[in-house]
Image (cartoon, rainbow, N blue to C red):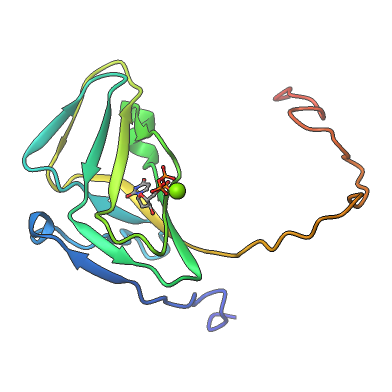
Length: 160
Ligand SMILES: O=c1ccn([C@H]2C[C@H](O)[C@@H](COP(=O)(O)OP(=O)(O)OP(=O)(O)O)O2)c(=O)[nH]1
Ligand SMILES: [Mg+2]
């Protein structure tokens, strides 16, 4: 079991190019053995203070070339979000495989206090995800299900 695919996920090679303002920062990094996301380091010049309700497009100092069968999601870090209200306005952000610009993080301060991020702070995490293509097949009737059109809490919204 230990040597099955489920314990040893395949490694996908993704090209990364560091920009001049990111040369001294680490590559996005898995912080623990089985971390899903690679933490991303802020490439702000010195520090940046984000006022409550403000959005800040944070530079990362790198670009990537993702193979076409994958995408990268930019997700919030729960600690920053829960403790400071610092999250991502477009979560999860989408990095397309054909994008060749600098990866940027759309931070938003949803907390009550200003949040200061310093150069090298880990402000988000990146997750590599598969990319599948839809080929539409138009039909006159969809297959029947028990749920049918029920949704938006139709099974109840109680937490008990
Ligand atoms: O958090 C993000 C989200 C997007 N991008 C970059 C990579 C992505 O491939 C591109 C476009 O993102 P998206 O498709 O989400 O934005 P859009 O508003 O649809 O822009 P476009 O018309 O350029 O696709 O912007 C980032 O750097 N960070
Ligand atoms: Mg788009």
